[in-house]
Image 1 (cartoon, rainbow, N blue to C red):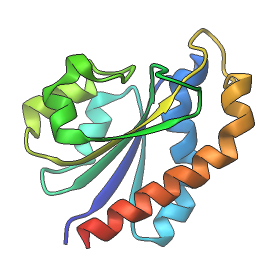
Image 2: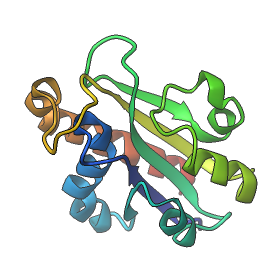
Image 3: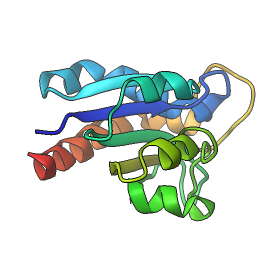
Image 4: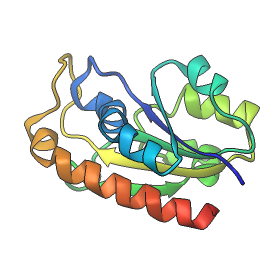
Length: 152
């Protein structure tokens, strides 16, 4: 059986840019209860690559450019997203996604993108994401558990 691995990426010093890291940190114990590995990747591409294999089913959680309302969640199939990164709304389409394209071009999984409100220097989430934070975490866990059922 493939290992389901969740990676939170982003820069926690840039407000909503760190939402992927902050969410994974908040839900990692719950994921562990379901035998799902949670990795706090932040912006360290090498650390992320060192903790995954081609056989993993990967879920990346990251902030995305807003398409509608801050806090909305987008679920995007990972492999096509990596191949069409120009259309990807992730704030980190360079770096981890480029490395995955190079080292794990056939890796299976999803990107869970959380629409941001504000990207600027600061260690706190924007008011919009802070207000919705618990609901975002709850929704992300539901999505991950639904994905896990597909891979088991």
